[in-house]
Image 1 (cartoon, rainbow, N blue to C red):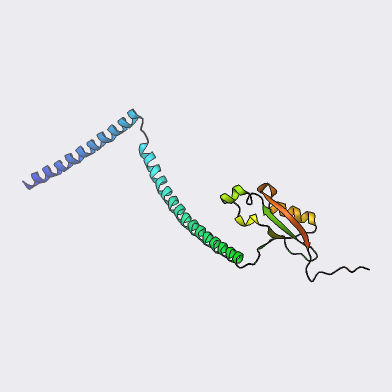
Image 2: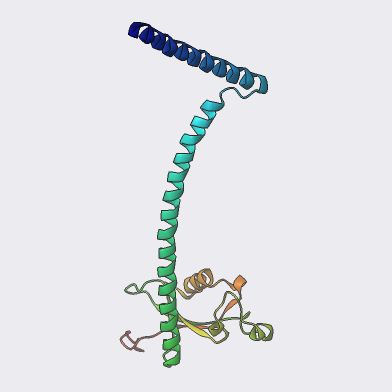
Length: 188
């Protein structure tokens, strides 16, 4: 009697397993037939590839977010430094000291030329009503430039390279700077 129950139980499990296997096979074949009919073969491969790509894109996005945070910090540092420098420039203007811009490097035996430069676009009446967007309003007044060059022509070329006339810069006066320690030529 127990043996009959055991055999019945084993055959029930066997038939259930066989039914499950046949059902799984029918479902798999049905899916393949539907995929072929609607042209969606290989969708699983595409989904697997896209899942891998998605993880790589997420990793790349995280890297870019980190880079952006670092660059934002760098930009904030530069802006902070710029404000400090602008404050120092404004303090030097208010202190009465004259700002002198330098072009070139001091070389032994090379003369220094002093030039006064203005920007004609800043000094016009139209520009006085609204400030010029790219040029400091201080350029309406002559600005002192010291140029280290071999000749006055080379000094003028260097000035025009740094402050192009096309942008409104004009040299109003230029002369060689004679320092107190320069040798004085004696007449014979």
